[in-house]
Image 1: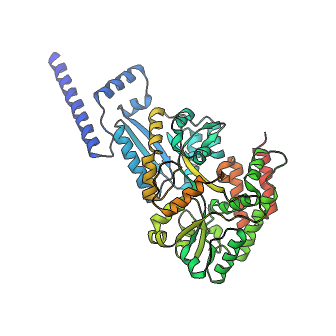
Image 2: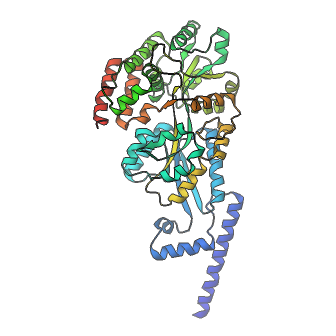
Image 3: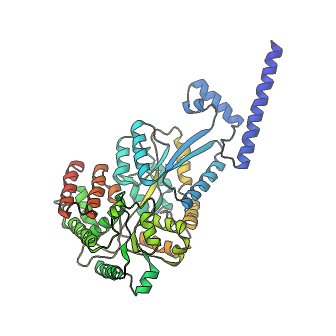
Length: 459
């Protein structure tokens, strides 16, 4: 009996030694498989098992930690940067494995909402701030990381951080932030002798010249509804100024979503549709799969109004066009409007941690790594993306223009569908989609928004 017992001990020692050696080799080789546990981790695991704690580690049968990360960095270059960042993190945290799941924008929103409702949310997830994130906060689904964020807040631009502030607390750390300008084809402008417009009247004059020369003024793929909404927000911001929207949202005084600035924005959109400033059947073209981008790259269309991520798309998909044809300008002001040139439309993404995360300390360390200056520099150099993080040496003149818009802005209006509560934000996209499709009137769209606002924003 004693001999068999001794042999078992020797066998167990050999197995443990082999496991530790395999883990060490895997870590040195940069393998994607989970690294082996150390003796200290084994001891910790055994103690946890004895106390009936750390259920996830017991289930996995090892002392390693797995963190799940959902994001929308599916562009090849952005994904490359994220992977490098995760590799750096895993190298400095050998007991942590990161399982990342990149997705497209709209499917991600649906999947995360479903997962939250089912209690199957990832440890770390991205959001756009505003009402979409606030709904999860109110449901108790988001970990309070306000103190952690404040400890590192000095490395982020305030305009980026502010996107994720709810009830005077920060609920996410920004990893992308920027304006949504007008991108244009510089060669077309040169060939036709056009100048960058400073007013919407000048922009319209340019559009007419373009149309007369057989060029579509604006590329638009609006099947997912949000691309067209960018133009509506810009026009309403230039008509009414930032305070008009904020007053309507906060239900201040008599302000409503039937303000003339919202109606005028709808009227101008429909006027441009009727003039042929957009491609035929724009509501059926998909931006996410590249439909409207191809119109722009091919020279069939001269402008596209898009978020800051368009820079990365263009750099990845059409590097020659990016270098030789791409220009950008701030959305022109409307003469007589209340909006100012330094009030811009923009937004960003931030990483939040789920309240259900079993390893919040490690999750916060990963979030810091995914939003630090090394990540930001890599994202700028590789993918042409601004992060809202200070101290980045921007080498690209186009990116510097984008950075200047962000830094010099007196106000950055977040996208309505992210700022507003979910139902109201979705209605905003639907009514704008209907405006482009000429299936509603500007007055009716505004009335529909106000009716929903009275339900969703009631004090």
